[in-house]
Amino acid sequence: MSQVTKDDALKIASQVMHPAIDRNLVDLGIVKDIEVENDNATIIFAFPFPNIPIADQLISSVQFPLEKLGLKVEYEITTMNQQEVQAFMAMEQAAWKRTM
Image (spheres, rainbow, N blue to C red):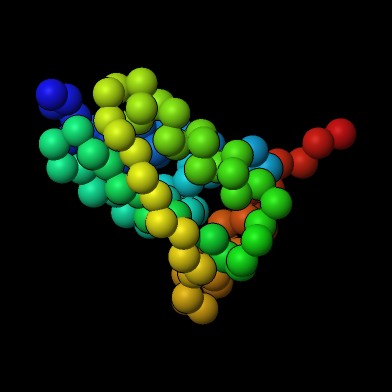
């Protein structure tokens, strides 16, 4: 049985950076919540709009490290509310990775 806690799972998720924005997925609000019970984790992903092209990549980037710790990971996908979208867009604009 895994001894991974919710705090452990959130710490791992907070180390996953968005590939185009210099912020982690927890700060951006994409990882909205993680629940851990026994060896099961449920992650709630909130995206700013439906059908984002990199959704699978973002989900996998959180899912795989948790599975390596022995958790069975399930996830739910939702869309951010207007306030969350505004916060996301402000962080995106401030931290967009500029490439030369």
